[in-house]
Length: 129
Image (cartoon, rainbow, N blue to C red; front, side):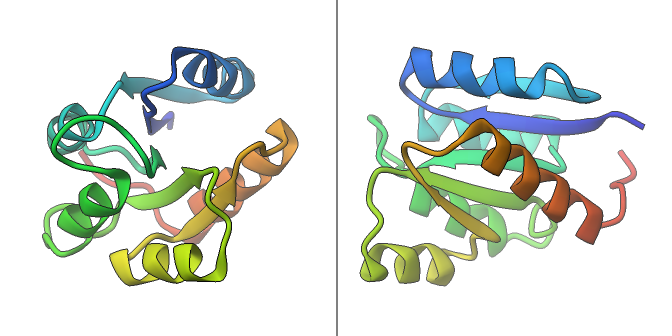
C-alpha cells in the first residue's frame, strides 16, 4: 500500500529536493506552500506522514499546524516531522510541545530524511482511508 506524505514547505527549491528524495520510494506525495494550505490539505488528504516547515508565511506556522492536527482526534495519528533551520534546545522543545514526532534541522541529508520517514512509518499501522 502506498503511504501518503504531505510536504508543507514555502521554499520551492526545498520542496523539489524533498520530492526528488522521496520519488524513489513507494509514496503518494502531496504538497502545500504554507501552513494554512497545509492544514487544509492534511484534513482533506489525511496523510500518513507530514514533513512540515516551522517558519512559513501566512497565518499559521508549522508549530501551530502541528498542534492543531495533534489535538484533533481525527488527525492525531498523522506522523509529523518538523523541518527547520532553528536547532536550539528551546526550538526542539517547542516542537515536542506541539506534538511533533520528529525534528530535523536544515540542512539535513536526504538519507537522514529517508531514514526518519521509514522509522516513523514502521511505527504506525497503515491508516485505513
